[in-house]
Amino acid sequence: MLLKDESMLAIGMISLTLGLLIGRFLYFEYAGFSVTDFLEGVLIGLSLVMNLAYLIKVREKPKSVTC
Image (cartoon, rainbow, N blue to C red):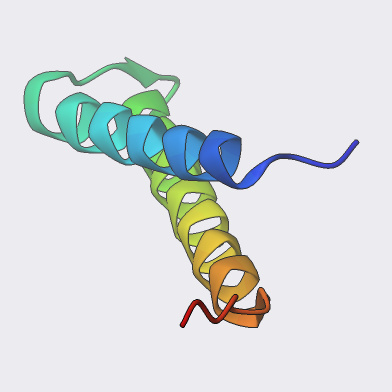
């Protein structure tokens, strides 16, 4: 499944926002394991991957020259 550029950017930004909000306002621990820290890390990591992939795809697109 290939994602469109706009979808990659949207997923990256939404996961960044959710990761920051979870890390800032929530805390849940289960059996000595911080679930919210884990979710925050996964969402921030997903955000990094999606945003970098978007930037690489946009950079590699051929530019159309209009004169």
